[in-house]
Length: 526
Image (cartoon, rainbow, N blue to C red; front, top):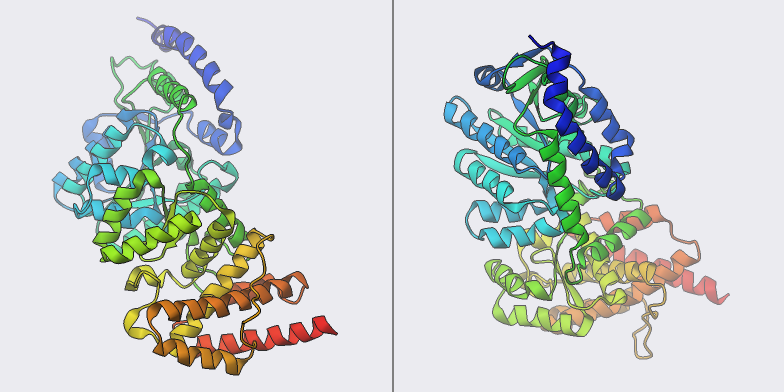
């Protein structure tokens, strides 16, 4: 009878030969495999304790609170196996099931929930979560997974955050995912949480360790799929087919594809991506403006707590639509209660400015990139995010003003909103002209209060025009003071984070800004 070594050699020789050529091609196009984070995964699982059959796998799943499933994104069998586990566990009937996925950003949770409620179809879901642009793998098996979860699970959650391409930030993504899983546990205290995440995240020192720190005592089972070293080792077993192996008490590995299948599927995607030739994608540009301004303000995009930082700013990033998604954006605005007249007003502003931020749906619409206007809108979004995106929660008119609450407090709040937006645009686009006009009223507290009283009695258009005029002037002076070293990033960050919905606070801030601006202007003249 053949020895273990001979069995392994005979079963593996041809596969290894074919695999060598594929791996050479992959390394030529993708150098990430040399990164320490990925090496830690490949080095973590070299041996196993025993073989497992189907019943033993089910027994292990039955006692787990959280099941981390390793996903090889390019391999449809990986997503389909996850779907089968969810269905089987749900049909057992003893506990509810919840699914969390890396594929969808947590910022897009509202889109996922619209699909869950059947308010949007598969095509709109795919486009709005930017599946093909930001993920790029096969849609069909992932959609099958989502559909299985909608049929059998209690909820589905997006777990990931930007940036996916920068492996220097991959640890932050693990911490973010662990925080999201902890939130899921609070919402579904008795459910089994299934998590489908890229296999490299499941090395013992990566996501599992962070989860153990955040959720001590949880029974976490890691289900790997088709790990190379374990596959080649199992090739020496006398069994005709090894279904799975137990690596240790908390980790098992199933085999539903060969390494050659894995890497050939990935090579094909690399080839497909290299041939991709679509229209302009404005989202990376918008996100870069937001990220740059947040970095300037020393805002931690991954902060899990409110206070001196907005909680998980990375999850608030807006949708970005272009002309190709015009019809879809109109439908989205309509579903959110924005009237046809208001929609046309918004879209008309896009014609003038090239782009616009739509706070009602937390989305950008970009037809032509013009830095000055895009930068102002990026600052406007960041300010709204620091407020917790109140406009998306409460609903607003087309100009962003709650109609029934047009008051002095709201005038001052809008002044500040325009001031920080104008300031942000100057930081990102310094060549933007200062906001000074010959017929501007004197910059004083009394003049501002008079403007507020006049604006409250005016219609919405004049209300907004007055608030913008005062805001631009204050924002321009704020930028000059920043250039002179009179304003620090910490002070600016506090301005972005100030809760303008508190009665009287916006008025106090405006008065303080005017006083400081006047003092700075006097010092400049002397």
